[in-house]
Amino acid sequence: MAELLMQTPFRGGSGEPDYYLSAYQAYRFAIRCYELGLSPLSTEVWYNPKNNMTNVTFEGKLKLARDKKLHLGPPRFERVTRKTPQGKEDYGYKCTMTTSREGDAAEYTAWYSEWFVSSSPVWKAKPDHMLQLRAAEKCLSFASGIGASELPDERDMVAGQVANELIPEVSATEFVEVKPVDKV
Image 1 (cartoon, rainbow, N blue to C red):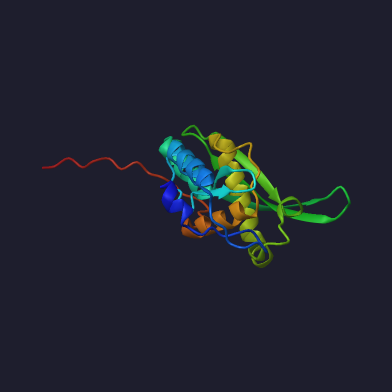
Image 2: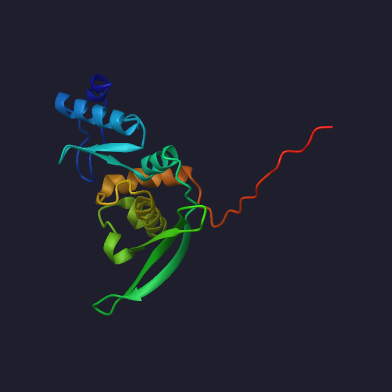
């Protein structure tokens, strides 16, 4: 896997050229992905060459939560507003997610003033979408304990945005138990 990763071009950050992993970086990335049970060829993870760390995206955190058989409900979003300490209007999205069959919940609010990435074309074009993604990603992290202490950078947000396009927003889902029908 590491040999394949060394031959794969990785997209650089905004204004940065694409790059290739060194042998050390590729082996480190492959080993960490193996430990996590995630594919380095997917959008579940990405390698940060600046600190030589493997970062898990929103898509990867969802997969890890499912693998742990956590009973997480769909994310629910509420647009909220506040005044900043400077007196300016700020808005954000509060994400709430049930974390058990008993209805326990986790929540996280992503604020525009705290998360907006001015160098990202995706953030400029779709700030509401990106705030919802950030709120869902951090809520999932707190609910599952997966990556709760890490701060993402721009590539995590862009990779996560791709994952979010694959997973449509669900405002509410009601599950009904289906009982088997007796055969005659």
